[in-house]
Image: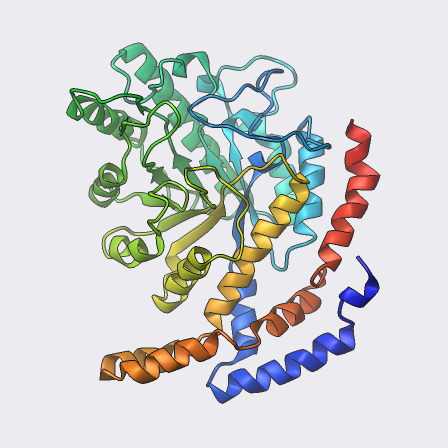
Length: 427
């Protein structure tokens, strides 16, 4: 990018000084908003870096109704390259952040280790890296891309042998998550998602859900200290191969999370294209202890596009800030795009999520709430519309400057340099 398109430090400081005055006039402390933003971590998803391939097999063939399109150069081929790419991404983000791993990213030294037999030692490299870089780790059992998932069913399978295999894998995953929490001093959120469902209309919707509940109860039977590991369950509306019926629907998992006291996961790409998860947050938070969000972007289906500055993203972050839910919410990202630079996809999506959260934290929420409770909806509307034109971008730029990360399009310059120096050499 031309240097003329990147603001100077003086321009950033001057713009921030004006923005700070504008927000102060509305009763908003910009310094406090930036402080709050810096204290909240995103959980980045490791699978953006290698198209959900993992290190389990050379083919890395996807299953479970998942698909990644594109073949941009520089795909990470092993754990060292994936961590190298992640290091670059974190250098582009203000704040300290986490990483969510899938089980297929185990490092087994070239040995074939069945998923039911995975141990904390197979993730020692990830723990060492996370400790050295002050990252927390989250975890996901991988209930897809495996011969035991070829039928399209795992924990809800009619075959008890198949169910037992995936139960044991999820139990092993919880213990791995617990080991992360103990080693890093930060609780690991272990999230269970399965692809189970029918392509065409089933005649028995009841039995698979009974089986799934039994499987989940077996998985969560052993109590693990929540200081180290917390359980979450994730729903989906439909998938490729499960268009007519998904066992783990939103209603099923909402009921399960409420009655079992586990976290509920809301993925912004797992609902109807016109359905936003923002309105669900206050409803489910009345009954579940904590929430895990997978922030994504569905385009007509659960296509997991890179997160952009959309109305839905802003609504999600506004709801978290307005409802004071940030202390009970774990924000993760979940998308994969191989048609563009993978490091850029990671960074652009994460920076958008953080920008949207900052914009939400810059609202005069107490004033807005008071107007609403008094019935002054005219003033509420006027103030909400005025906020849309406030210079929050100047606050974001200043925050990035203070955090020592690139401002604006300087981020793209660093990504291009990394592509030339590192990604091109991977062939």
